[in-house]
Image 1 (cartoon, rainbow, N blue to C red):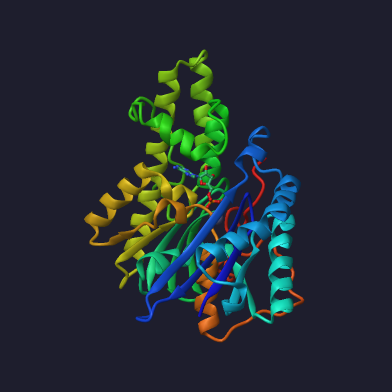
Image 2: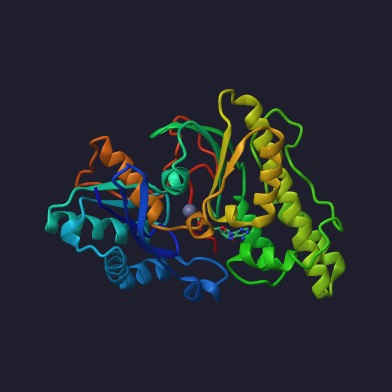
Length: 353
Ligand code: KG4
Ligand code: ZN
């Protein structure tokens, strides 16, 4: 089965083709991602209207490139997977309409995919990880710890009660004049910094909840930065390093408590853009060694948004005989675990301006 994936939920226009090889192992045949960073950088965040127009003008070419790189024509595609939420509705609409048009004109079944499910299943594509596993999903719009027991069986153990982790990185970068998107710039600056110079708060630590909170961290960094004005390059580096260390510590602390609650699981998968941060990966790696867990961290290009994860989630669902109807609409909110109450960060993904 050759599956074409389409992703347009935020500021990456992406298409990909995946399949299984003759032994049933996952195979990534192409993975094309066009980032819109340049279009949004002067605004310091993603502007929904600009994003939707940019997806519209690029998507056809990106799909053609994904097919070319996979050495397949559209006639060889057995199914299309497309992100239909959560995300910015304008962008989602572009992807969804394109998938429906291809499906109707070429008589190819299509499936709408939850973007968060794409992140959640990436490790099955890259490392053929078996269920069950713990998932730490950390990106620009969501921060969650989820127990993954099977396709569609997700139990949210923790979420953020305010900002997402990626948002904390983006806002810290903006505050320190490091530009957008913040995460990679904060990580770069932190390399030259002293992570022990500042001690920032770790909200909710010691409380019963596994939930996370990051908005206080942003305020603490602002307060500290204001005391130091004018900031030297070293001050900025030290603030970034201390912030990054605090985030890594918060995430490790919450994952540790989740591990303690989850008997019978010994795999921790990280996913989402923030999972590409090497300090965070290293801290989680130490935690996993201590607890006899294996840490599975997908390659960096499959941590940030991409269509390979969408194609893969669709492939798993097509294999179960699922397909979507033509009257389907995009959803700006779509929590992975539908049984949980609505909290910011649980199923929201979108504009950061
Ligand atoms: O998963 P993703 O590409 O898009 C969403 O679904 O949101 O994640 C983007 C987020 C941004 O907030 C970005 O600043 C953050 O991931 N990010 C990082 C790093 N690379 C991307 N955060 C920390 N360190 C990084 N190296
Ligand atoms: Zn994402």
